[in-house]
Length: 104
Image 1 (tube, helix red, strand yellow):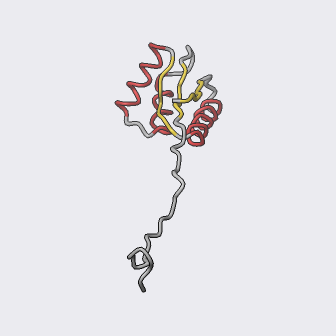
Image 2: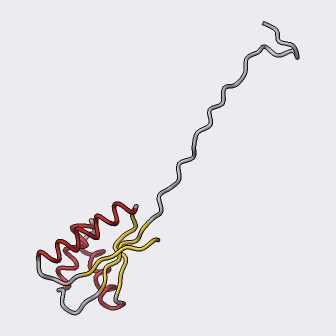
Image 3: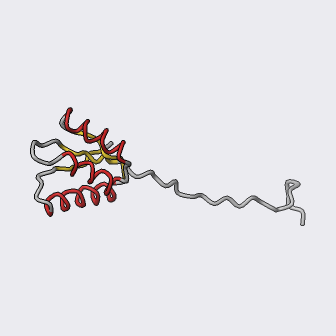
């Protein structure tokens, strides 16, 4: 079929797709205290942040020397869950270990 203007009438169908926005990243921070054993902090880093012994020890020493250390960066929901897991585990083991999150 011929369409006025010389085209065939066949057009290109374009579908607009909404661009998905990346979720805002959040850092999970561990805070130093003078009571929680270093071994327990390393255990938490291994258990909840899947760090190997070397990485967990490095982060634990950073927390011990600087007062705060980054455990990882996650979406808000994941970061919030990890903070809760660490705090609950510390409480169950009668340690005052504190963990928090902040926008990355």
